Image (cartoon, rainbow, N blue to C red; front, top):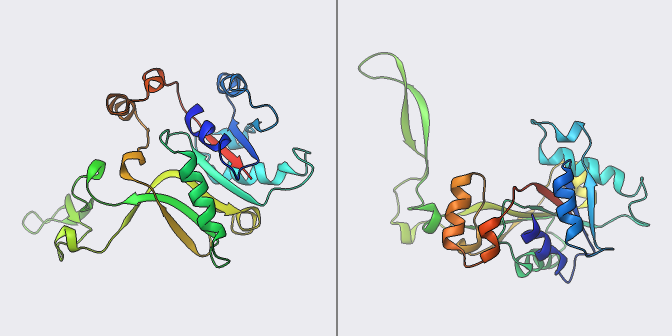
Length: 230
């Protein structure tokens, strides 16, 4: 959690960083980081901390309580929603996403991602399993189906992006109106594949530890979602 939090704290645009959690241990980690007056803990309600709760539940709950419950003297304008499962996100990434959103009045939301081939993502051709009737046995069975066509050589194929989970930026107004982290005219902020690493499993964490020069990742604690309000 502390890696993306530190990146957000060093942003030249972000006024407050909020960590949303129902864990006392994570709250203590946040408080140990210091930064009083800029870094805060938002305690998720029982309703938004269920196993089947999604991120929008927390974002909307936080947004509705922020001004009404006196978290601040005025409401925020933009929200940068970050996931601490993306520990390689940098301050430059965050500031670049905000600058992209502010560069044009026609942009409503920004999502981070990387080019969708090579590196962690192997060859860049996407497959999924479908249940189809067997031509010979007459019974349904799972079969692999290619989603990305082989109609182009990879180097000549249209450029595609993969959502990397690092951040989502939108206005408070759009978040409340559309009840979604992204809405309206959405733009992609491209991050390098080397920083587009999402830790969801122990295997992911072990791989990141073996590749990253950051010594502190060798003892990385359990992670949780958090919210950045600007």
